[in-house]
Image 1: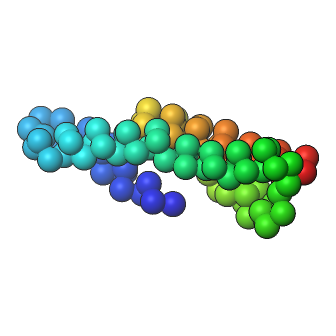
Image 2: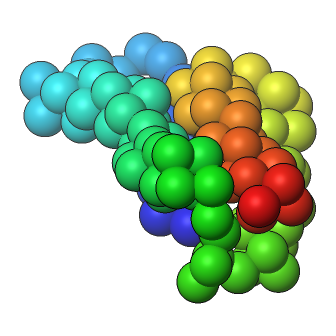
Image 3: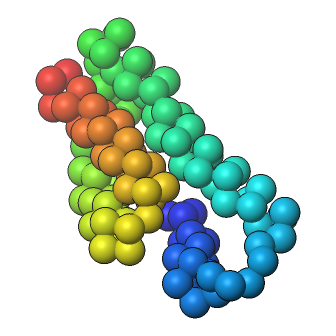
Length: 107
């Protein structure tokens, strides 16, 4: 996924605690956190479409199950590296992905 850039945040925190952070990096860290929270909600139109129309035609169960499966290790990664932004973002992704999977299974 597009979240691979967050690794630098952990490395900077661990290895470069004494260096002063530039305003650009501070801004980028905050922006990344906000996007990590907002991003999962981009799936809401798909969820709404499935549940409001009571139809999941055109939605691939295999794709959404695979997305659910490959997203889970990111939660573990965030826990191991104590990265709240990764943990929160990917828990939200999992909730949204699971909602789609449930919708496809029901309809």
